[in-house]
Length: 300
Image 1: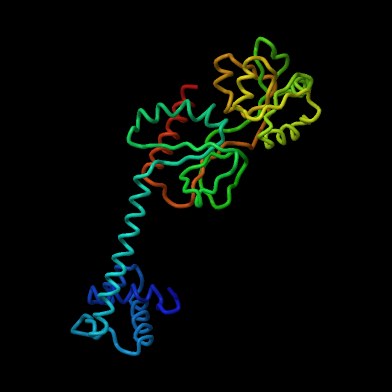
Image 2: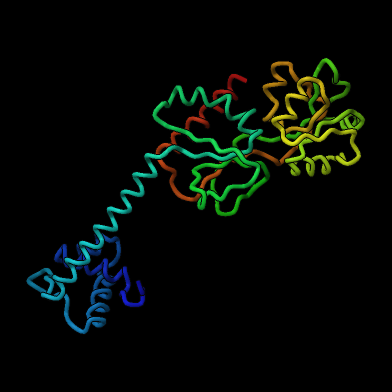
């Protein structure tokens, strides 16, 4: 289709409304524009087609024969467009909510919370996609993303889900807390301990460098993912640097000690989505998650 063969869609919509309603003023109110704008669109189409499309009848307007035929065809076309848009919106509402995040965050922070959500909202299916790569929400049809960083995130909207203060943790039976974890002495001490590093997450290692720890100078064992690293850390295989959100339950349950802790971190996990309103199901999940975090903060 060559769009150059079609007049302005705004003009066609204005004319169809005026012909259907029999009034320029009613068309203006329906389309939330001025009377002058509707009149200008109709005149532009009449110039384009070289013939009148509307004529005055009493206090209203009636289409000419040519105008009536054009209005009928436009009404049919706009109705098909509206049906397609409704079907698209309904399909969006009916499909599962798709959320993407990293494997570590899903395993350690998100998944333990989901049984409560499923119990409260069994009618809202949720698909969790895990990948270290950053998903393109528009291209991949993703509703929500949880991303680690400072932000802002161009082209996306959202809010901080939980802060991501960096901590160094180790098994209590092997690694004792010798200093205030936020002190320089604590960070100096952990440099000499055996380490476990996640080879798949270069961003965490860059954070260590900003904290004065060069990963290349550590006595370290590299593992291919945090899913393998954390069980080894819990078993005493070495210490590990983790965002506190990923290990706070381990610390609370006594499986890990915090040996060193970052101060005043701007890093966080952000819950993000494309601009505009969420689907009903996605909004249900976001609302539930916010309330769950508020409850946890009050009881914590």
